[in-house]
Length: 90
Image (cartoon, rainbow, N blue to C red; front, side, top):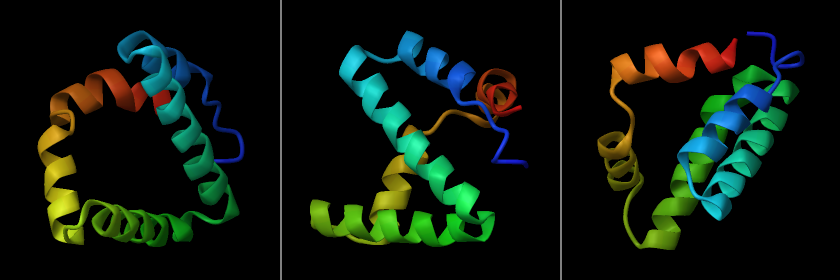
């Protein structure tokens, strides 16, 4: 994936349509930051995920595994990901 040429606009539009105003803007901001990390080197993404997971675990008084399990349960099913969201990533 060429993160340098990735355009976030289509994904941002989808998030604005799907989420309420402030929640959409927070998610878009998070994607902008993650994209900045990916552009610094895609090999940083697994480390970024681990770091954010640990920060969430500490903030929520839980464990990294509990954080990941909670987000797994809330994530879009695979078929929805493939049909709706994956095309937004080019």
